[in-house]
Length: 86
Image 1 (cartoon, rainbow, N blue to C red):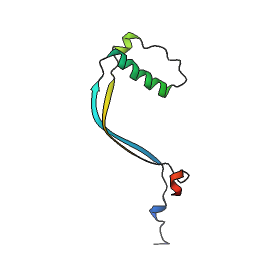
Image 2: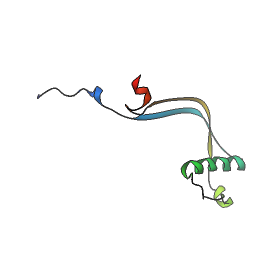
Image 3: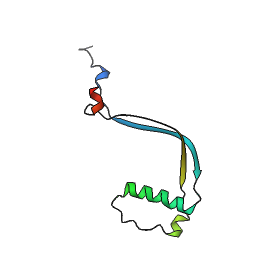
Image 4: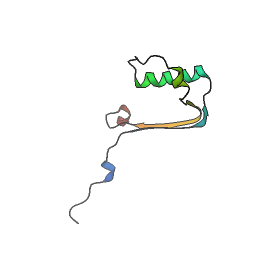
């Protein structure tokens, strides 16, 4: 064996994670379904321009709400993160 292998403790990585536990239920209420879909569109297409949701599409689109009972998370986004100096 040549030399000494580097310590794996020198490895660097970035991560963020959230674990949510709860109860999922299918949303039947039309207004709540539209609200949920609008929230998704605002997140993934913040510039807007997506218009209204046609009734025929609403009729075939399932929306599931998760009522959160427990949520945990952690974050370590690298050595430049302010928490890394602690």
